[in-house]
Image 1 (cartoon, rainbow, N blue to C red):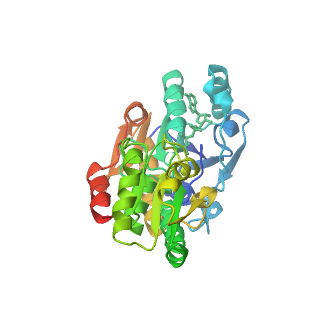
Image 2: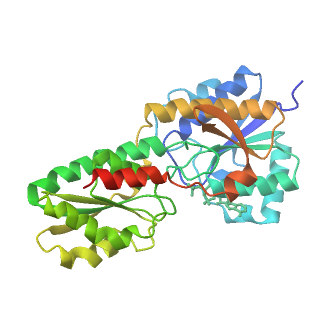
Image 3: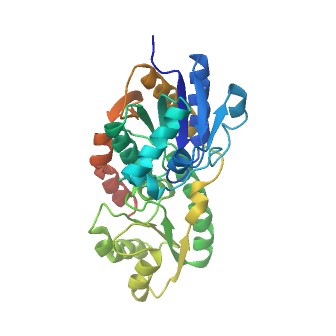
Length: 326
Ligand code: ATP
């Protein structure tokens, strides 16, 4: 007989399309297993403020296709302190919540890991971040949608760049990781991709563009991950523009539109799988673990590893992008 009878679910950190699909899957899997579900609003802040609301099967109707998160999300400084986490624990106890599913990124999992070292209510994580930068899973909720949003935008920029002989520096999200930049760069045939993982890329940017220029390309698109050490797209454009006077150099920062929109089919399906797996993990008495997807299969990864270890981009893909941009 499982010990867990009433679970809480929250979204924490940056929002990502598909979080609602995960909330729905958590709720419906819990209902299927005769568990009660409490929605914890506004991330860990809601845990500290006892901002709770019961979720029934019908509470999560008609949300699988919606971006954002019906539970809202937040960044919460107080949860970083032991006193804050104690308040959260007392509120969970009071509400008789005996297991929690946290949908968020590595910061959220760090908080969850600390909580599970201090208190006896198990936390299980679901990777939800558009950056796809969490170790132990090939996939994070929201990444596929964000990637498709970027590709659609860059295709449009390419049309106008070709029409005017322009060189565009397009800045995409990825504060510490170049997954969105690398994949969108390959998918849009970008002439160069600048990501934090590849330090020499910024230095070779001029030669990459010159190689394209010799072939008389009518446009050049350079994708820049916002976290690149060389600065954002504006700084990099400034560094190279004098060398390419034949081009009209422009910068486009895609910004927050990358976080919004209806989740892709992939995000909906994977969020559904992960939501289901997280509840199953709680029923199996797991704690302090993240559910992930590796090689198409559900995996369990201790928070400690998911947070500590670095997930690198595939360097074969970096090479592929170089070869295909000549
Ligand atoms: P994203 O990848 O989208 O930024 P994230 O989960 O990494 O998501 P953070 O802002 O880093 O986002 O963390 C979310 C929340 O997790 C924080 O506001 C805080 O409440 C909690 N948290 C983060 N780091 C810690 C920590 N070291 N100790 C305790 N709690 C933490």
